[in-house]
Image (tube, rainbow, N blue to C red; front, top):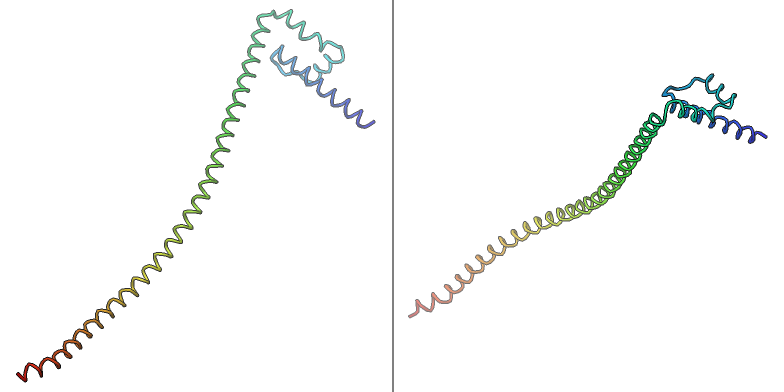
Amino acid sequence: MDSFNNLRQQISSEYRETVQRRYYTVTGENPDDKTVDLLISTGESETFLQKAIQQQGRANIMDTIQEIQERHDTVKEIERNLMELHQVFMDMSVLVQSQGEQLDNIESHVARANSYVRGGVQQLHVARKHQMNTRKWTCIAIIILLIIILIIVLPIVLKK
């Protein structure tokens, strides 16, 4: 029973809104509750629009209908533009997410390259030390070899 009453109230409310819209369309003014109640109670709400058309003439009503159609077209255009804007934002979201992943990938490559460079610098220092030690020992070996050659060759040359 409650659902029936709720449905009845909903239908009544929707009918009142319809009558208000019709009244506004014809007169250009918002009706007060008293006027709406009067139209509904007398049954004039259905014939009100027809009487207004007959009284005001077809041209005035056609202008109103054209204005309503233009408003409807404008609303449809705005809706289409909003859908396009929504699609642009969705595309940008996908691009930003993709570029974020690429930035993360680049960051990891840079960090890895940084560690390789640090390791390379350390290996260069070690190689430099080895090079200096190798030169030092090569010089010492050449000097010892010259001394040995002098020790062997000098007595032979002096004996002659």
